[in-house]
Image (tube, rainbow, N blue to C red; front, side, top):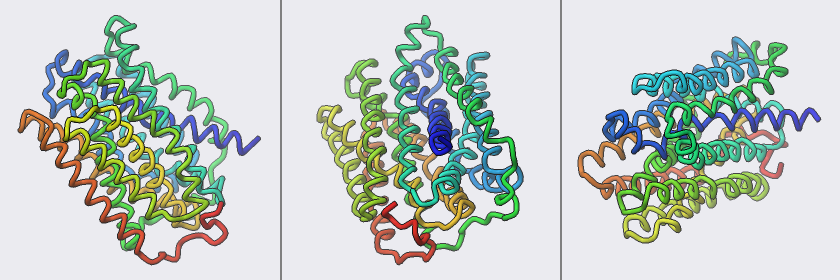
Length: 390
């Protein structure tokens, strides 16, 4: 029963890490017209949380050392819930930007520490990261899929549409309450250090950054790109939903396959090639449904592998948290530039051609990093007994 409760805690916590971002994406056009924002300003609503997720990720390990793993995750969930709820109180560009920052800080703490939580409670089962990644995808897809229906069903009430996701946060806080009753003495006795000089950790950080750049660029702009080609607002939102939903079965199965069979390099490159095909289809003005499927397969595989790699490369929950914090710090800082770059190129060029070409370049750079990762010798930090057969 305890293991089931821990799995539920992972699932409900991760479920809250994306709605504050993905609920905005289908409504970017509405916000631009209703609040007078240009594309670059609208990009900040997805860029700022990701930027904060990078800047504040190293704080996660320091706060965990002080307060304990479970308490710090609880505080992070409280920040996300409060930021989401406040969007229902006041509707303005300033409030949207401020809550994007606060929510991003909460995500920056919870993200790497959930990897440490998995390492702590499931030390020989790195494939459990699939629960984490699937929940992230479910939260993202639900928020993006229901944004327009909720908006229309509530008489186009933007504040309610963005704030309703705080309900998930309240549920998560209730579930995590039993876990914060005692301080984690093992954690508080160890001071965490980021693996700044470890070559594999640096490569993981570069990979995470390029992966996140593509992931958040697509999450933020796949609907506007579809609308620019001639798709209706509803059809464009449907394509975003397809992009996110297709990630669920991929995120659910791929970590287990990698944990069982290895061949991480092969799976990483295959997922990147899938994204490459999707972008080429869009550039060639082919139907966007197949493109969204290819992009979803790629993103659905790359993200859980990026979460899994720090877990299988380390020996302890503290190390797993530190590696995750570093990869997410540098990775999200790089990734935050993706949506901003796409919005800036669109404002400059008046269409998405240059933006799509930039995505091709990002994917090809990511493949190079993945090949380097697959050829790099083991760092010697892979836990014995954990292996890739758990």
